[in-house]
Image (cartoon, rainbow, N blue to C red):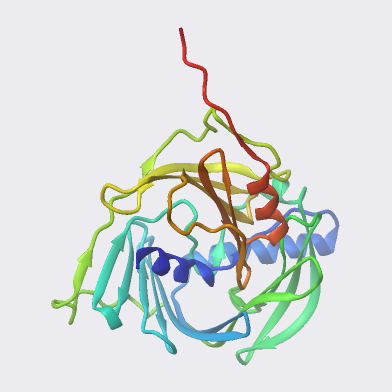
Length: 328
């Protein structure tokens, strides 16, 4: 249940970022994206957006508050299974009314805010993406500017960002694969920006008969690769951001988790001892999220990320394991 809840949270939190460029028009791109980063964190807003992936359409309602430098966010599904997520700097609370369960988790390294905006490193990103002004549009009855995010290789997605002219909030985000196809899309159908949106209602109200689950937090490990694992083909620009270890069930197998990012795109590598269970042994895709699993030297390797299928497959198939030498 918990993994599916976290997957639901992650499936529509698409990444948006920015890069430095030369010339007057490029300075305009940079200015828009810098304003976007600021606005998405400091403004209070609410609205309804749709998430299109795999020919399926999900409708979500979002409320974001930013009061006294304290961010909170509530996302609620309006169709399909009832789901609600409340995010704060300290926790991610997932409410599943159909099974009367509330899960309270600590934010993880690959969790994303909505709309997902990563800390900027303009010089770094410009090595792997090009950013262009593409024109104007109208989304949710608001005027928007359109910015293209164009990857410089086939290991990353491109994006089209439609930013509200008044606040630079992302009104629409298209994730585009190497063939120019839209693999997922988020679009607001209504949006209200209002500082009077003060707080988000408590999740405890009416939930006294729910089961409350507090998964044990993952153990943080040094952000260095272990000596017995070799990541032979990590695409240029992706760097290890976090490394943890966790048992997904009491007494269960420990899973080591590596998070890599280029400052915009992110993927995770999960490693555990291979068992008799049904691990992923092929490619899988949900919207912009690709996964690929294989076994290496008695270990199950699963790579998941908002990157092209070629990327997760290349990483999984290039991993090598060797028993570390025992010091004498």
